[in-house]
Length: 276
Image (cartoon, rainbow, N blue to C red):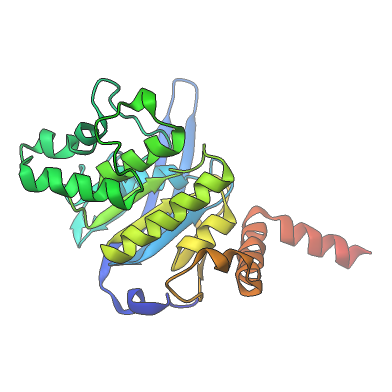
């Protein structure tokens, strides 16, 4: 396992996951979602989580967000144990969950409204974020007047308006078409480069994880464990043209190989080859 590349390699830990397990109990059975997970993420680092469906990626994200409690183990953000949602942490989910009766600018300003800190500077901040997300002129529109990609842009702007130091994103672009998804990847990186922060990004897309990340965390099937962490040595900034470069596909193949190993696919293939 290599060290992360760039400034994130020497940054202090923003997130520490130490021996974390999570079990959900139903009337009929116990579901072991995570088991003995260990992970450290540096301040300012962009890290993606990938793995088979049901491997605990979203569960791990919610534990870091303080939306769930661990069954065993310890999660810390900025050195402090996580027992509830923290003010420096913002979460963005797959569904934008915009309030249908509020216009775009009021949806973006919602965290400031709830915290009682909304002022003229906050509204200017919201307007600037909408500009960065390509939504100039849509401030007074309502969610029903937006496309799915535009709604997700609003949701991302909302998650950034309070200047969080940690942004947790749970498959935010999973329901979008490929072209819109790539546009939003580009815009997210632009915002991240202008306003550095720690980002943890859950995705099922290997190419998306590679394009965005400093490191890709590969998880094994349930109960989820951290199978391996792959450093992404591609230089930043990352232009759209990188998606057509041979080195981009080389890294995708490397990550896919690790993911296959986590799923047991690579092992099965090698055993079949040895038996021929």
